[in-house]
Structures are given as structure tokens and as C-alpha cells.
Length: 474
Image (cartoon, rainbow, N blue to C red; front, side, top):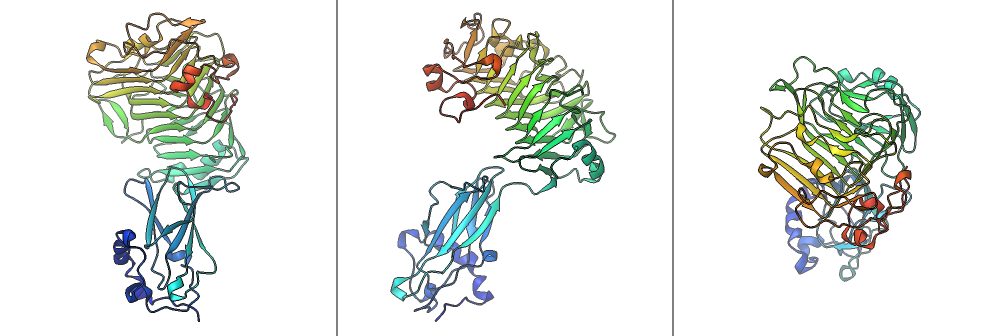
């Protein structure tokens, strides 16, 4: 005799039953008539895939899985896999054939990740009911749905044909490059005011050969999981701004960019121009973030340039990243000569966390920007072989630094085979590790750390610590 499913009216009770079951774990699975439905001596059926519903919680940190009660079951067994690498799925946390005695469960999720939930209906020996013959498998992703750009495309031509001017700028629009594919960017791409994400594959990243660059008109942009070959870049910047469009939101004569500008898990090989330059245009960017990136700069060592007489970046964060120069130029990491906060914001921040910086003249022209509510955070970074001493001095904001919020913690300033002099008046934390990090081959882009103290304290970009997977420069 096969088990049976309750009619639709019974299945609609799942919301109420889920609440009951969430609190029932201490009591064990119920086997009275309320939960068995009188099902005995049965071969139970799996929950149909359409009835296994997965949603995010309000903070998008947990996936909530719900399903209708299978009457007569002895509980359920749930396994959750991360399938970013489809050929090598990995179990998420403790979710390996985990017993669940209710009709809901939840597991932690990460951004831009793919999952597979395997749900097994268990038998009930007391009722002589057998487990479902097969498990139910349901995919789940935290990736924003995207338009796929075919491998081999010239992105300049492709975006021209796609017509970004038809995109609704009120919502984020994602475009995805194919796994492991190669692309070109033959000329500048005008992103208009589109809130755009361009992403690759986390495991097998695509490559874009750059001749042109990307230009926005204030919509915000996110680049993720892409390898950029930049040696042939003839444009004046990798990413920056075009003229402010008519009708754009303005404040104090600057165009507001409320969506973030973000670079995540990207590599930039032989970049001869700034990664970011405002192009002399008055844009007020609320958030600029660089995370898990590797940036090799060549002819022009500016990582970031702000030259407009109006506009600024409010909150700048770079973390878990390496930025280095491989030429003898005397360039800053950042040029901030155009930063202007007046009338825009009352607070701002510059944060450098777990990064490795190599061979810049200095971090930036620190007198070029100032705001009373400025906070500066420099934590567990390596500043290696800068051309000018006192690296900490050139991280501080302009004006009276005593009125700013300054946080230094656990950094290394190492220059020409000895501790970088002149930092004590600026990094007053007394937490500096004044030891050579013993990076393997900095001039070749290999910053693998050899100093046990640096390793123990976790200073610098984590990719170069022995606990991380071995890496080369690109």
C-alpha cells in the first residue's frame, strides 16, 4: 500500500504547522493521529520539488526551507551543499544528513553563491512506514538573475547593441560573463545611469582584455570575479565618469551616486592607468569598496584619483587586497586633490584593512581633503618599500588631525630593510610589528609572507599567508 498526500486544503496548513514544529524539537517527532494522518504500513513519497520552498530571511543571511507535512513520516533528513564548483560540491556547515523533526529549517548563506538542498523523507518503524524511495533535490542561489554575455564577445560592441538606455535605472541590472571565457573591451563603454553589476564565475573566472574603459554617469557599478588584462589599455582610466546627465540628482553642485562602486575578487594585470578616476567630473560617491582584489600598476601608479573641484567619495574601504607598483615612478596610491565634502556629508571614512601595499611614493596627498567627521582606520596592513618614509603620515586626513577619529592597529611599515622611520608621531597605537614580513618576491608580485610573527598576527592581505591557498601574482 502506498502512502497518500493530503489534498490542497491540508497542504495549505503548512504555515501554521511550521510554527508548531519549530518549537517541537525538544519533544521529538509526533506520532499521534494529528501528525500521522492515520498512515500506516505505507511506502512514503518524497516531497515534490515544487513544494520544497526556499526563501531568504530579512537580512539575507539565512535561507529558510519549508515543506508540507508528510503524514506518517518519522522525520526528515536534510543535506545542504555549496555548488559554486559543480564538480566539487561541499557540505554547508553541519548540514550533512541532518535530522529535522519539523517542516522547516534554515542554513547560513553567502553572497553570490549556489546551493543544492537534498531532502529525504524518513520512514517510521512504529507505524511500519518506509522512507521515500528517492530524495528531493532543489537548487538555490543568492546570485541576482543576470543577462548572459556569450564568450568571445567584444563588450564594447555587445553593450552598444544591448541598448543600456532602455534599462530601468531604479533597479540593479546584472550581466554575467561565461565561465572561463575570454572577452575584449575595444573602446570605452558608457554605462549611463544604469545600476550595473558585471560578474564572472567565482571558481573559473573569465578574462577581459582591456583597450577601452568603463564610464558611468552616476548609477553605481559592481565588478566581481573577473580577471582583467590591462597592459593594452589606452583609455585614460579603467573606471570613471562621463558628463553629468540632465536631471541627475544634485547636491552642492555635485551629482549624487547613492549606489555603491565596488570591485570584488578581481585581478588587474599591468594596469597603466588609474583603476578609478573621477575624470574631473563633480560626482559625490557615497561608497567605494575594494575587496579581495589584486592590482598591479605600471606606468601611472595612481590607484585612485579625484581631481574635480567639487565632489568626493564619502566612504572608501579597501580590504583583503594587494596593490603594488612594478616600475620606478614616484606616484601616490591615491590622489585626493579634488576632494570637497562641504555641503555634502557631515561624516566620511577612509579604511584600509588587511592589505599589502608595495613601492608607492606615499599613500596620498593627505592635505587634499578634510572633514570634521572623518574617521581613518588602518588595521593589519603591510606598507612595504615605499619611496618616502613616514607612510602613516600620508594616510591621515588634512586639517587638524586631532579632531579626527584615528584608529591604527597591528600594522607593519618596512622600508629598505628596516622599520620605516617617522611613523611614531602618526601611528601612536604602539601596536606596530616592526619586523621584515619576508615577502617572497615583491618585485615579481609574490608577497607570500615568511615571517612567523607576521603570520601569527595575520598582517597583510590574507591570500599571502601560508594558511591561504598558494597564489602567484596572476
